[in-house]
Image (cartoon, rainbow, N blue to C red; front, side, top):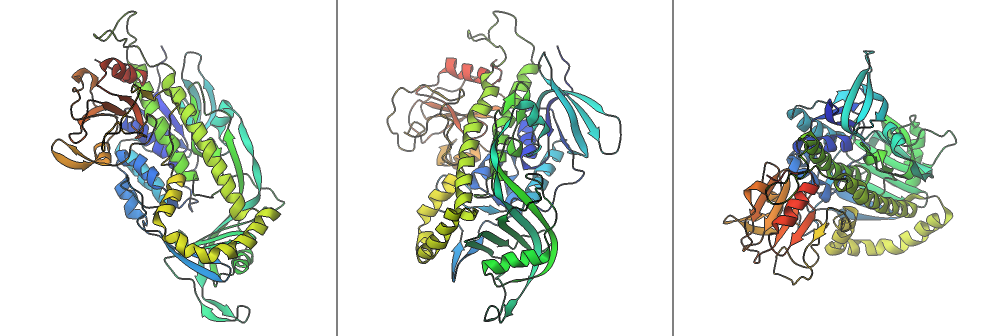
Length: 555
């Protein structure tokens, strides 16, 4: 049997790699994280975190730190030709979540919080360390060769699993499959700038300055211009789209700086009353829309930008990557723990006629079966949004030129419709995502009748996100997600259900009785907050089978 050096080697220490490592560590895996860059990449390219992403990170104990560093009530000004529409994105009409808001936060701050949490658990990111070769082992696991920037000797590492979170040019992905999709004709311009008052005869107005503490957004014929007061090397972060230059830069990577006069030209063309007085940093980034043909191959997996890349429309990059990470992290940890346990003798069982064998392929196969369709849907959504918002295709330009003036007077009314706004945020944040057809989703209820507030109500099918409802547990009123805010599998019992046998519980299997939910049913909730197994009664046989399928021991 192979003697592995580590359960999981994570390649890449962006938000995806760090979140995945943290999820795996908290579920019992031995993890190493390597990153070829000697220092965290700055400035940030992502600045928005969705409420569902915060829910996914909550059991890892990092959401309080993230909320302290971000802004939950960002204000915006939409500049639509001659009209400026104020938008205040405060508490949205999002029921069933502890985070009914968007979080404006720099990607660098998210990475710092996740890296700090890992360090507290004894896992320090190995910066300046690159995977230069890798191979799958015939008996399972992977071998990788690590090289450090200081010129030390190469290190040979054997791991049970290896996950590439190493961006669009992923070395790991090239060992897993292809990268399907195409390139955009447009590029994004990023910059951290200082702004001064604008005025002069060309604008026929007195000197004015953009309001601070507010995000300014221009949807114009030639594309998008954003100015956020969240810069890192200067007070303002600028993001704009324009036609890509002839000198093609590497896709997804920051290219050469952009001259100040070109940045000012983009601001002027957008009609914003601002003068760029200083450019602290700038770069061009070529855009593409691609998805990996496969998300896994044996012990090799890809996640985040290594698995899918898309435009910045909808702020999906960082968020979708964290969805991948949390989905995969606990699965690899459970599979690794099962791999470390002795193989049971043929015919052995756990005392209840159930085999104690290691998990089959369903657990690890479920990652690609769940996440690839979800990420493909995100790719389609962002592609459509970007085409409408920023494409230089004549039809897209004409649509913005014609529709923007028509829609502009209606926007204040539309924005005041909180339910309509919430519906859009729910879609962007992936609240509606379901893993209904996953091999981990099992429904033992042939027919359902609605139960007031109960676990068996219609719509809460296996594979669905479990909402943060108010429940009574052990004589106290508590939010459901507060009960689930720790690593592991959670078994929710209705008031009259039989208790879960002790042999099925453990450090990563928890049971809760909900006293105000009448009935005899049970619902198993996965570590990532999705319903997995639903039954009208406590079904020990199927519960043990499900736990065994995900690699958890049943004593």
